[in-house]
Image (cartoon, rainbow, N blue to C red; front, side, top):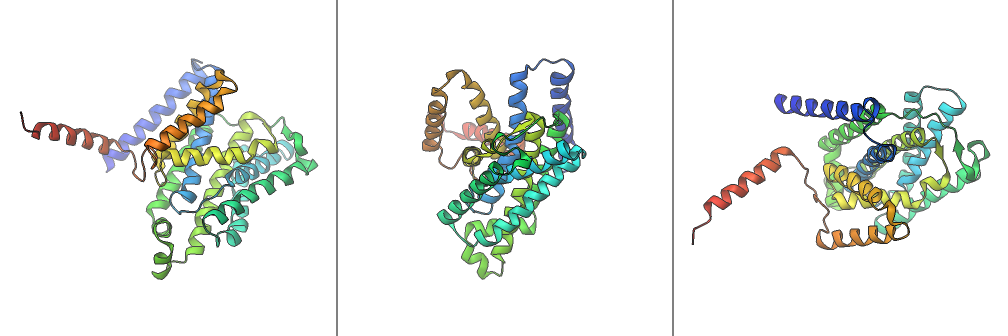
Length: 320
């Protein structure tokens, strides 16, 4: 276990150093590729945090962009208008999103299925509507001139922090309770699990990290508008979760990178881009409805074991 953790640590440090050298020192990566690289990190945080709610707790939520908006605007106010440090602004935005998640989650998480999806969708639109009518944050024009403080180091640290915290939560007793609720809520409640408490816990934790994603987004693109956090952003995050596999963290990470890369690759196709994008997603869902990884996690050990298993099966096949 220690050797495995050491190997993972070395790989993560090497990855950080490699990208840092390519972007900040050698400037091998051009500006367009840098934008997509940063979007990958932000989308990973959004997808992993939404997977905690949808994939691991089984609550269909369509208002994730609303939490990103809260994190983005609160952090932008703190840095742009109040001159506070970036790290404080990010955590303040995340805490604000978490508090909103608790306030929204307590009444809505008693709903199930389609009703919960509609309620969370309405929440996202309420947040967007409020931002349009608040002059202090620029109204419909949004906030411009936000300090560009999101760099590769901060993005990498917050992405790893999000994955680490959610992975540990899932492996904890509380996380197991959330998975039990997803598998069978009535049975979980019969076993003495406080289903409302755990659903609100997962919902608010997902909202916290969505706020982190929003804060990083605001301080990289230095312009945020209410339309930036429309229903389509929630839909994009949900696509990544379903594409990667409901209940798979590594699936969400791979899907966030793949969908972001696909969007970038189709940028030259203009109006046909969304049609091609939708058709590709339909094809993937038809042939792989459980997502890329289903509920499994991608590990090197599993990969090597499958390869060894495949070799063994080939060796044991009878010769004709």
